[in-house]
Image (cartoon, rainbow, N blue to C red; front, side, top):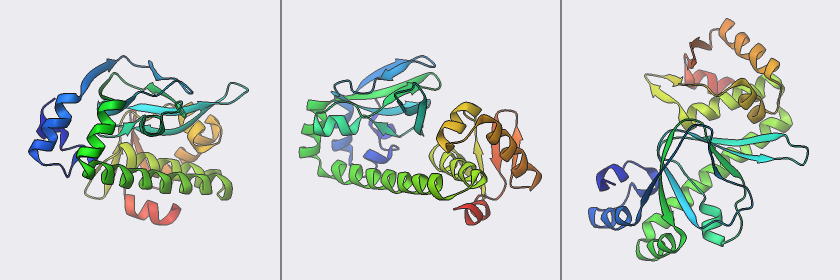
Length: 225
C-alpha cells in the first residue's frame, strides 16, 4: 500500500515517512464481497484489520438468535484490536455491509510495530478511549431516553462514524437497513420509520433516495445529545 495513503488513517496519522514505510511493508490486502462474514465471535484473533474502502458492522448474537449491532465502521476505522492485544477470542462478529477492501496486520507484526513505533500505541489508546465514550453514551441513551431520543442518538452516532460533513450538514450515504437501525437503537423497524418521518416533518432531516441528510448537525446534536 502507498505509505502516504496510510497516513490518512487515524491510527497512522502521526507517523513519519520511514515509519509509514515499515507499516506498509507488513500489511496484506484482503477483499470481501457484500454481506460476507469477516470475523466470527469467539474465533481466535490473530490479525488486526484497517478498512481501506467500504463499511462493516460489528455485532453480537444473543442466545435466542437476535442480532445486536454494536457499531458500523467505515474507511480508516480498524477492528480486531482487542483479540490481537490480549490473544483471546474475538469479542464480536464483523460482517461486510458493502464490498470492502481491508488492510491486515498479523498479530506478531502488530505487536512488534507497537514496540518499535510507540506513537501507534498512543493513537490506538486515543481511538479506543473515543469508542468507550461513544459506547457509554449509547448505553445511556438506551436506558434513559424514549424511542425518539434513541433513534436521534443512533443517527448522530452514524453521522459521526460514517457521515460526510460539509458546511454544517451531514450526509449519511447508503443508510443501513431499517432492521439494522432498529438493532442499534434498541427499538422496532416501525418505530425507526415513524421517527425518521417525524424528523423530516420537523425539518431536522431529509431523505434523498437512500441518503439521510441532517440539515443542521450542530443544532440536531444540541437538541438530542
